[in-house]
Image (tube, rainbow, N blue to C red; front, side):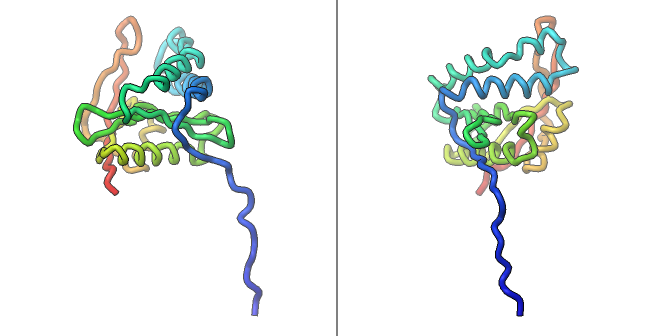
Length: 184
């Protein structure tokens, strides 16, 4: 007869998601700058990429956190220990029962550790708590990694698209809308 197998699961990651605080704005700004510089390299001209700076994003997040446009507007942060490594912003849409994932990003060095999934789940839970039953996300059509991540999470294209003006010369970026149910 063998003895019961007993072992510890090993070290567990100290990972969490929480609602952002005003003091998180600098860290969120830094993560956003890095994520957007990477995501838009080759899409935007170099001078546009240079505008993606942590302090500028941080100032915008600080204002948003100090005075959110509605109770549904929320900035969530993913943390590894005390360090902010990712963020997601959500908001209501003009359509009844629909919430929008405005942006989701994870620091390049913290990817593939579950932070994106935790952020997306927290965004869905938060929207559900505000009586939203559907989630929309606009994603650059050429951003295959984000589209694949969101598709694997249950969102899919509904055929809607838009061209967003991305620079003063009028260049556009095609975005597609992904939608998913927030049903329980």
